[in-house]
Amino acid sequence: MQRVHNVIIVEEGAELNLVSGCASDPDVEEGLHIGISEFYVGKNAKLTFTMIHNWGKNVKVRPRTVTIVEEGGLYMSNYVCLTPAHDIQMYPTVKLMGPGATGRLNSILVAPPESHLDIGGKALLESPGAKAEIITRSISTGGTIINRGCLQGDSAGAKAHLECNGLMLADTGRIYAVPELDARTGNAELSHEAAVGRINPEEIEYLMSRGLNEEEATATIVRGFLNVNIEGLPDTLAKKIQDTLDSFTLHHGM
Image (cartoon, rainbow, N blue to C red; front, side, top):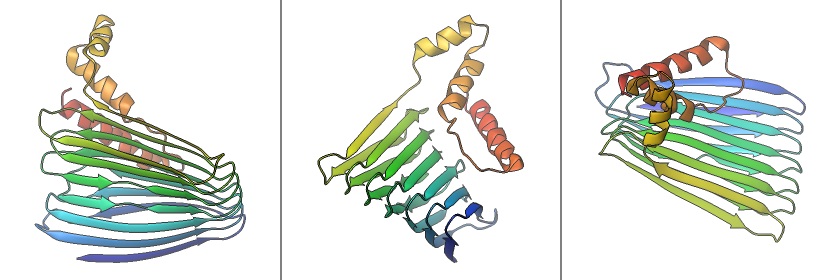
Protein backbone atom coordinates (compact mmCIF):
# COMPACT_ATOMS: atom_id res chain seq x y z
CA MET A 1 0.00 0.00 0.00
CA GLN A 2 1.12 3.54 -0.82
CA ARG A 3 -0.20 6.31 1.45
CA VAL A 4 0.61 9.88 0.46
CA HIS A 5 -0.55 13.21 1.95
CA ASN A 6 0.31 16.41 0.07
CA VAL A 7 -0.23 19.92 1.43
CA ILE A 8 0.61 22.68 -1.07
CA ILE A 9 0.32 26.40 -0.27
CA VAL A 10 0.90 29.03 -2.96
CA GLU A 11 0.99 32.41 -1.26
CA GLU A 12 -0.33 35.72 -2.58
CA GLY A 13 1.14 36.65 -5.97
CA ALA A 14 3.31 33.52 -6.17
CA GLU A 15 3.42 30.94 -8.97
CA LEU A 16 4.13 27.21 -8.71
CA ASN A 17 4.40 24.49 -11.36
CA LEU A 18 4.11 21.06 -9.74
CA VAL A 19 4.57 17.78 -11.63
CA SER A 20 3.65 14.58 -9.79
CA GLY A 21 4.50 11.12 -11.12
CA CYS A 22 2.72 8.23 -9.37
CA ALA A 23 3.64 4.66 -10.32
CA SER A 24 3.96 1.07 -9.13
CA ASP A 25 6.88 -1.30 -9.55
CA PRO A 26 6.45 -3.66 -12.54
CA ASP A 27 6.85 -6.66 -10.20
CA VAL A 28 3.97 -5.62 -7.93
CA GLU A 29 1.13 -8.04 -8.57
CA GLU A 30 -1.48 -6.29 -6.44
CA GLY A 31 -1.56 -2.96 -4.64
CA LEU A 32 -3.51 0.01 -3.31
CA HIS A 33 -2.61 3.71 -3.64
CA ILE A 34 -4.29 6.27 -1.40
CA GLY A 35 -3.31 9.89 -2.06
CA ILE A 36 -4.68 12.87 -0.12
CA SER A 37 -3.91 16.33 -1.53
CA GLU A 38 -4.81 19.73 -0.06
CA PHE A 39 -4.06 22.77 -2.23
CA TYR A 40 -4.39 26.43 -1.29
CA VAL A 41 -3.99 29.13 -3.97
CA GLY A 42 -3.73 32.61 -2.53
CA LYS A 43 -4.81 35.97 -3.92
CA ASN A 44 -3.55 36.50 -7.51
CA ALA A 45 -1.46 33.32 -7.22
CA LYS A 46 -1.16 30.52 -9.79
CA LEU A 47 -0.79 26.76 -9.33
CA THR A 48 -0.33 24.33 -12.21
CA PHE A 49 -0.59 20.74 -11.00
CA THR A 50 0.14 17.87 -13.39
CA MET A 51 -0.36 14.26 -12.32
CA ILE A 52 0.99 11.43 -14.50
CA HIS A 53 -0.25 7.98 -13.50
CA ASN A 54 1.55 4.77 -14.52
CA TRP A 55 0.07 1.80 -12.70
CA GLY A 56 0.00 -1.99 -12.90
CA LYS A 57 -2.92 -4.08 -14.11
CA ASN A 58 -3.98 -5.08 -10.59
CA VAL A 59 -3.48 -1.81 -8.71
CA LYS A 60 -6.37 0.11 -7.15
CA VAL A 61 -5.97 3.89 -6.95
CA ARG A 62 -7.88 6.32 -4.71
CA PRO A 63 -6.69 9.97 -4.96
CA ARG A 64 -8.63 12.55 -2.94
CA THR A 65 -8.00 16.24 -3.71
CA VAL A 66 -9.55 19.54 -2.59
CA THR A 67 -8.34 22.96 -3.75
CA ILE A 68 -9.23 26.42 -2.44
CA VAL A 69 -8.65 29.38 -4.77
CA GLU A 70 -8.78 32.95 -3.48
CA GLU A 71 -9.43 36.24 -5.31
CA GLY A 72 -7.82 36.43 -8.76
CA GLY A 73 -6.12 33.07 -8.26
CA LEU A 74 -5.72 30.42 -10.94
CA TYR A 75 -5.61 26.65 -10.46
CA MET A 76 -4.87 24.37 -13.42
CA SER A 77 -4.97 20.60 -13.00
CA ASN A 78 -3.73 18.20 -15.70
CA TYR A 79 -4.30 14.46 -15.27
CA VAL A 80 -2.85 11.87 -17.66
CA CYS A 81 -3.43 8.10 -17.47
CA LEU A 82 -2.43 6.10 -20.56
CA THR A 83 -1.47 2.71 -19.07
CA PRO A 84 -3.59 -0.17 -17.67
CA ALA A 85 -4.96 0.11 -14.14
CA HIS A 86 -7.33 -2.25 -12.38
CA ASP A 87 -9.46 0.44 -10.77
CA ILE A 88 -9.07 4.24 -10.40
CA GLN A 89 -11.63 6.39 -8.63
CA MET A 90 -11.04 10.13 -8.22
CA TYR A 91 -13.24 13.23 -7.98
CA PRO A 92 -11.20 16.36 -7.16
CA THR A 93 -13.10 19.37 -5.86
CA VAL A 94 -12.15 23.00 -6.55
CA LYS A 95 -13.62 25.75 -4.38
CA LEU A 96 -13.43 29.13 -6.13
CA MET A 97 -13.86 31.31 -3.07
CA GLY A 98 -12.53 34.71 -4.17
CA PRO A 99 -13.86 37.13 -6.82
CA GLY A 100 -12.41 36.31 -10.23
CA ALA A 101 -10.98 32.98 -9.09
CA THR A 102 -10.46 30.46 -11.91
CA GLY A 103 -10.20 26.66 -12.00
CA ARG A 104 -9.36 24.41 -14.97
CA LEU A 105 -9.32 20.61 -14.92
CA ASN A 106 -7.96 18.70 -17.94
CA SER A 107 -7.84 14.89 -18.22
CA ILE A 108 -6.49 12.49 -20.86
CA LEU A 109 -7.58 8.89 -20.27
CA VAL A 110 -7.01 5.56 -22.01
CA ALA A 111 -8.70 2.39 -20.72
CA PRO A 112 -7.32 -0.93 -22.05
CA PRO A 113 -9.24 -4.18 -21.41
CA GLU A 114 -9.92 -4.92 -17.71
CA SER A 115 -9.21 -1.31 -16.70
CA HIS A 116 -11.89 0.63 -14.80
CA LEU A 117 -11.50 4.42 -14.63
CA ASP A 118 -14.08 6.41 -12.65
CA ILE A 119 -12.75 9.94 -13.15
CA GLY A 120 -14.44 13.24 -12.45
CA GLY A 121 -14.20 16.71 -11.05
CA LYS A 122 -16.32 19.31 -9.28
CA ALA A 123 -16.06 23.10 -9.34
CA LEU A 124 -17.85 25.23 -6.74
CA LEU A 125 -18.15 28.79 -8.07
CA GLU A 126 -18.75 30.59 -4.81
CA SER A 127 -17.68 34.19 -5.63
CA PRO A 128 -18.71 36.80 -8.21
CA GLY A 129 -16.92 36.44 -11.53
CA ALA A 130 -15.56 32.96 -10.75
CA LYS A 131 -14.79 30.82 -13.80
CA ALA A 132 -14.26 27.09 -14.29
CA GLU A 133 -13.58 24.62 -17.07
CA ILE A 134 -13.53 20.81 -16.93
CA ILE A 135 -12.37 19.03 -20.10
CA THR A 136 -11.92 15.26 -20.49
CA ARG A 137 -10.70 13.26 -23.49
CA SER A 138 -11.13 9.51 -23.06
CA ILE A 139 -10.49 6.43 -25.19
CA SER A 140 -11.63 2.88 -24.49
CA THR A 141 -9.78 0.01 -26.13
CA GLY A 142 -11.85 -2.48 -24.14
CA GLY A 143 -11.96 -1.00 -20.63
CA THR A 144 -14.56 1.04 -18.76
CA ILE A 145 -14.46 4.82 -18.35
CA ILE A 146 -16.94 6.85 -16.31
CA ASN A 147 -16.58 10.59 -16.91
CA ARG A 148 -18.13 12.63 -14.12
CA GLY A 149 -18.26 16.40 -13.96
CA CYS A 150 -20.17 18.88 -11.80
CA LEU A 151 -20.39 22.66 -12.04
CA GLN A 152 -22.12 24.43 -9.17
CA GLY A 153 -22.84 28.12 -9.74
CA ASP A 154 -23.41 29.80 -6.39
CA SER A 155 -22.50 33.40 -7.27
CA ALA A 156 -23.48 36.21 -9.60
CA GLY A 157 -21.64 36.28 -12.91
CA ALA A 158 -20.18 32.79 -12.50
CA LYS A 159 -19.25 31.15 -15.82
CA ALA A 160 -18.24 27.53 -16.37
CA HIS A 161 -18.05 24.89 -19.09
CA LEU A 162 -17.95 21.09 -18.89
CA GLU A 163 -16.78 18.93 -21.80
CA CYS A 164 -16.63 15.10 -21.81
CA ASN A 165 -15.72 13.46 -25.13
CA GLY A 166 -15.10 9.74 -25.54
CA LEU A 167 -13.87 7.56 -28.38
CA MET A 168 -14.59 3.81 -28.61
CA LEU A 169 -11.85 1.82 -30.36
CA ALA A 170 -13.09 -1.68 -29.48
CA ASP A 171 -16.33 -3.64 -29.67
CA THR A 172 -16.03 -4.30 -25.94
CA GLY A 173 -15.65 -1.65 -23.26
CA ARG A 174 -17.78 1.21 -22.04
CA ILE A 175 -17.70 5.00 -21.83
CA TYR A 176 -20.29 6.68 -19.62
CA ALA A 177 -20.63 10.47 -19.31
CA VAL A 178 -22.30 11.97 -16.22
CA PRO A 179 -22.46 15.79 -16.52
CA GLU A 180 -24.09 17.88 -13.79
CA LEU A 181 -24.97 21.57 -13.91
CA ASP A 182 -26.29 23.14 -10.71
CA ALA A 183 -27.18 26.84 -11.02
CA ARG A 184 -28.10 28.41 -7.69
CA THR A 185 -28.33 32.01 -8.84
CA GLY A 186 -30.25 33.58 -11.71
CA ASN A 187 -27.31 34.88 -13.72
CA ALA A 188 -24.85 31.99 -13.57
CA GLU A 189 -23.77 30.72 -17.01
CA LEU A 190 -23.10 26.98 -17.00
CA SER A 191 -22.77 24.83 -20.11
CA HIS A 192 -21.80 21.28 -21.02
CA GLU A 193 -20.93 19.19 -24.07
CA ALA A 194 -20.75 15.39 -24.07
CA ALA A 195 -20.18 13.01 -26.96
CA VAL A 196 -19.24 9.33 -27.20
CA GLY A 197 -18.79 7.36 -30.41
CA ARG A 198 -16.52 5.79 -32.96
CA ILE A 199 -14.34 7.40 -35.60
CA ASN A 200 -16.38 8.66 -38.52
CA PRO A 201 -15.48 6.57 -41.61
CA GLU A 202 -15.78 9.70 -43.76
CA GLU A 203 -12.91 11.28 -41.83
CA ILE A 204 -10.71 8.25 -42.53
CA GLU A 205 -11.70 8.26 -46.20
CA TYR A 206 -10.86 11.95 -46.49
CA LEU A 207 -7.36 11.50 -45.06
CA MET A 208 -6.78 8.44 -47.25
CA SER A 209 -7.69 10.54 -50.27
CA ARG A 210 -4.83 12.82 -49.19
CA GLY A 211 -2.28 10.02 -49.37
CA LEU A 212 -2.44 8.30 -45.95
CA ASN A 213 -3.18 4.63 -45.56
CA GLU A 214 -6.01 3.54 -43.24
CA GLU A 215 -3.71 2.94 -40.25
CA GLU A 216 -2.01 6.32 -40.61
CA ALA A 217 -5.35 8.10 -41.08
CA THR A 218 -6.84 6.54 -37.93
CA ALA A 219 -3.71 7.29 -35.89
CA THR A 220 -3.84 10.92 -37.01
CA ILE A 221 -7.47 11.29 -35.93
CA VAL A 222 -6.85 9.68 -32.53
CA ARG A 223 -3.76 11.81 -31.91
CA GLY A 224 -5.74 14.95 -32.67
CA PHE A 225 -8.58 13.80 -30.41
CA LEU A 226 -6.21 13.38 -27.47
CA ASN A 227 -4.50 16.71 -28.07
CA VAL A 228 -5.48 18.66 -24.96
CA ASN A 229 -3.16 21.58 -24.31
CA ILE A 230 -1.30 20.91 -21.06
CA GLU A 231 0.41 24.06 -19.86
CA GLY A 232 3.47 24.22 -17.65
CA LEU A 233 5.10 20.89 -18.52
CA PRO A 234 8.89 20.68 -18.82
CA ASP A 235 9.95 20.02 -22.41
CA THR A 236 11.26 16.54 -21.64
CA LEU A 237 7.99 15.45 -20.03
CA ALA A 238 5.87 16.99 -22.78
CA LYS A 239 7.91 15.06 -25.33
CA LYS A 240 7.53 11.84 -23.32
CA ILE A 241 3.75 12.20 -23.26
CA GLN A 242 3.67 12.92 -26.99
CA ASP A 243 5.88 9.90 -27.70
CA THR A 244 3.56 7.73 -25.61
CA LEU A 245 0.54 8.98 -27.54
CA ASP A 246 2.30 8.31 -30.83
CA SER A 247 3.24 4.81 -29.72
CA PHE A 248 -0.28 4.16 -28.48
CA THR A 249 -1.98 5.25 -31.71
CA LEU A 250 0.34 3.17 -33.88
CA HIS A 251 0.01 0.12 -31.62
CA HIS A 252 -3.77 0.22 -31.75
CA GLY A 253 -4.21 0.51 -35.25
CA MET A 254 -5.24 2.53 -36.08
